[in-house]
Image (cartoon, rainbow, N blue to C red):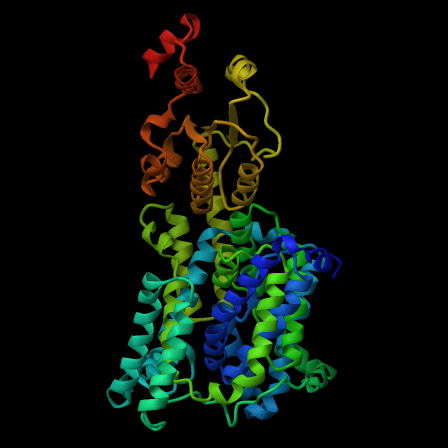
Length: 577
């Protein structure tokens, strides 16, 4: 709370105001769509966005984070709601169990922060995250097929949709398809006209008006809100605490609560990393988990869906000027104000519009970068990615992540064992915060160290390395050249590859020239495979040894200073290049 009041500064208030309002406007159609994807209805998405948006902004550890229901959290929440209904017999009697699960998830997520487990996010391999997120995207697209056609989605998630495919000829509603397709077209095309107004909001408003004015309710399926959509502020759902009085209920809801807690934490902290990269700041992972957990507990108390840090909304907030946690509060307050008069309007929103919005969200979540490189990344990473994706779509999200982590660990140990057996260099990864000058660099750095930073990579580069490497790059001094020495790197996995790529791109964006030395074997093949070399770092900046790289840097420095290379340090080295 202390940090929240410290955020009140006129210096950033204008940017926070515009950022928060813009993010709130973007959140409106999305949270309605996420809510409609569950049995609780569209209004539950709005309740969740309000509570998490404000509370996580006040207590969280990422100043620019915009929080609310997200696609991955909604997919799991829909499963929780379906289980709660099956367990109790109806939605009405199942609501206490459902909200108790959401509340417990928030409590567990906060405890992850209290026990300072946020830092362990960096140990999740990229292949697991990629497969999981792509699986979530496919789930959303598959489950929106029937709403796209104008009928309610069958139960059972993706498998239920596949089992009901034979019903499509009867379910086909040409008007709904036209509305859904129009929604998708507006979302993708309108930004070419202007990016000042969120395209999803334009699609929601315009096509809702069109269907309201020109179609009868029995022609275009509208939101199934279970009766009149409530107006005004939500009612406290204190009945959820009765569930905790019975130990059997704890056992039933704990697994799903744990899934939501871990998923919410991962989702939020990944978004925090994106925010850090954009604002050049450093978030507090543990504090963010605590804030998100409290937000999810608050959402459960008013009957809202759980959520997490929302990447798209956070990026929009930052681009619109948001810099402090005030922007997140403004986004949440905007939704509260909208809620006071929104109820009667929500009931007229066509399902096809929200299906179109959700399909574009699903398309955006799929990790095309990871998919594109499947043939070029290490086979172990490709196998893990595909297995996690398939398990996410067809089995269970928690099982997918657990299996992915176990597989990634086992396959990584096997790869490192193979490296050792081949007598490749295999010393453990050293402390990234400490650089020790190697023998062949000493004289060079004594004379030119103010212009050049040399990064020594010692040992295999794997998923545990990626986060620390990014931190190192962010903390680099003001130099003109960065030399990344790969002489002692025997193996690079997918996370390490993308960490190198992001680091190199970040340095180039700052006007710093990047060079590799000693690149060989598997790492060289992997960097060529994803076109980091020569696509980002040209062959002319990859040297077989440091001596050749030093010669190039000396030539650059001498050329820029307008003097000829000194005879004793140039001729032989320039011939080597």
